[in-house]
Structure formats: structure tokens, C-alpha cells
Length: 505
Image (cartoon, rainbow, N blue to C red):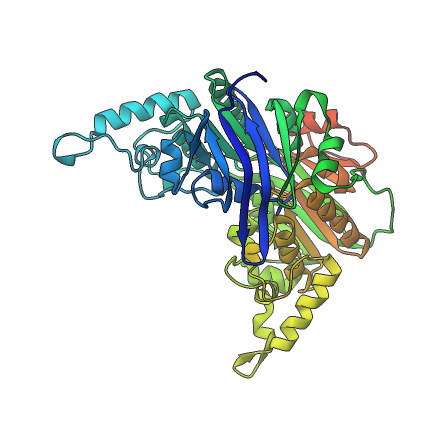
């Protein structure tokens, strides 16, 4: 494969924005039939480079070559016509249209007088969907599909053209484990067909499972390419962040306080049943399970987004009823949601306004918001959480994923909650920022916060948690302490092998 003509080659790609050199002479190649990982911290230049390849941006310098032919892409359609297909992390679907219309958008088969050839369209779509082994059809409305199935529609678009190179940007972020297997099968098929694949992911286990080579960007510059089989996570991490990273769990201990939150028999019919647990001040309680186990739904109930059909919630020893997020906030419960961009932030607003949004009514002076009070809050939590931004005026959508997550956490810490719930704290965040978030969670517990962490990543939940609740199909199977948990018994519990709940005090 090393002697093959590259399916895609980049030579000296430069892209600048006002005051920022986002790409600084990036050069590497992707071979036919190769899965080539592109890695780097948030802000390293990966997204900018992919937008250059996808025709969204044009490079200021450098050359892109597809199968030895120099190309210029002025639009995504032009890039697709030249054999480069981009599967975005952020879905770009028309939710009111059907699956078939989305897959062939802009390329609908026609009959006489410009009429859509629906029979041909549906037949072509069925052929693609059968390869993906999905449970929906050509005529289904995309807006009615789950996020995971919408991601599969996005992936289906890549199968409609004779692609030379396909770019997958965090493709498994919204997929279940079963759907990931299907995706990896699709990638294997593309590989057999001689398609070059660029695979962007922060998930090291995926990188080492399916890729052949790994290229690394740091600060907009190309830092090298390594063969996956001849490297390891430590070497890749050091190349990405320029230093060694301590991924071990902190052994520092601190005294736990009183029970901050106690849940007994909590039930939402159809989602989870008879859930009971408690979390103490100074403790991190992890929730681990497969997608659909009910973890996020429990968090949404505690935050007033769902009404329980049974059970009780006690805060600091007092039974409370929570009917809305306003009730939860008033009672001292805060939720950092799984979808930080869609639910946790207003991307077009600045950092200060995002951080003070829940308490803006308390920061008014007459009919106006007290700017000085807002800035003081932002400055306090920027320093406390080490948020890296030029200042409060920076639009939060321009921050890296890790700093966006810190803005959301700071927003809720500024409300002084008793219980902080963090759902998928490091989804879409690079390994360096992930370590910072983990250390921050442990530090918050040491400061006396009761913290609940929901995660789909076993290394993460093992690293940050004092105790771990294992869930399966809407029920708690077992609760482990940090001393009693192992990877094997945790996997058994979330797979439904543990026959009954067992709490380890």
C-alpha cells in the first residue's frame, strides 16, 4: 500500500483568518484503501483543514491533489464531484424531507419535464440502506428519526458517489454500540473498494481499532504520521499536546459530608423503574451503562425536565417535588447537559452572557443588566476553571470544546448548587482537555460539591468516580465502590448479567 498513488494529497496548505494562522503548511497523504486518522487537540486546525478539503474554505497557499490530479474546490458540491465526501459531526440534514430526498439532495433522479423519478429514487435508497442495516425506509421523514439514525442518513450520502476519499468527522458521537459495528463494517467495505478514508475522532480505542496510520496536527502545524500498529496512546498524546499526560486516577482522599441527594423508587414509565441511590457532599457518583439504559433520563427528571410517575427525591434530608428546571435550580440542582452546543450554550452570544444567563434577573439594575456584576462573575470562574479565552467578549462558538464545557460548568457553579450533574462531560473533547475536565470534577468534589457524572466511556467513569452505578434497561443492577469495581464486573452489570441490584457501601 505504501507504493500506491495517494487517493488524496495535501501539500503546504495554509489558511489564515484575521489575527490567526489556522493552518501553517500542512502536508500529508491518504492512500487508496487506507483508514487514516487525523488527530489533534480542539483548536489544532482539524476542522479548518476538513473545511478546506470539503470546499467550504479555499486555502491561501498550497495544493490539493486527488489521484494525481491537482484540484480546486470552490463549494461542497464541487468537492463531491471530484470524489471527496465529507460526513460532518454536526448534522446537515433537511429534517422536513424524506430519507431518500436527503440522501440524494441536489441529485434527485428525474423523468420527463423535470419530474422526480420516485421509483428510481426509492430503489437506489433501499440499496444503500440495506448496506447500512438500518430500521427505517426511504419515505420516512428525517425529523422523526433518532439522532443516531439521522447520523446514519448522513453516512448514507457517502455511498451515493464514486468517492476517492471520505472524511468521517466524529462519526460515532451519536451512535449506539450496535450502530458503531455497522459503521465500522461500512468503512471496511469502502476500504476494500480502494477508497481513502480520513477518520477524525478523540476516541483512542476507535483509532487503534480501525485505522492504518495516524497524522497529528498541533497549533495548525503538521507534527508527523505514525503507523497505528507501531505506536501507542502515550506517543500519540505526547505528539498532540507536546507533553506527557498523566491519565491515572488521583488517589487523594477527602472526608465526605452528609447526604446531599437521596432518590428512592424513582420511576418514569417506559424509561426507567424503581431507581434508588444517594450521593454525599464531596462525592463523585458515576452512572455507567449502554445507550438507552436510562441514565440521561434520570438526570432530566432530577432537573425537572421529566415528571416521575413514582418515587421520591430528598435534598439535604428534605423531600422535594421538582416540576421544572426553575424548581431544580432554586433547590440547588444544576445540570451540565450531554449536548453542550444545543442545550448548554447560546453559541452566538459571548462568554460572559452565556455564563450569567441563568441569573440574569438577579443581576439587573433597574431596567438594565449590571455589566460590572456579570464581568466579575465571568472573571472569577474564568480564573477558577482556567478557561482559555481572550476575554469575555469572545463569542462562545469560537472556543474549543473543552473551554466551551468549562463555560457551561462555570455557569452552573456560579449558581452555587448543592448537586452538580454532568452528562457526558468530555464528549467531543480532545485528550488534553479531557484530562483537565476530569481533574476539575475531582477538584469540585474535594471542595464539597455532590457530583453525579454520566458517561459512556469506561476509563472516564473509572477515573473520576468514588462509586459507580451500573444500569441496564432502565434498572440499577449494581453499585460499586472504587475499590470493588473491575472492568469485568462492570461490563457484566451493564450487560444485564447481574441478576439483581447489589449495593456496595
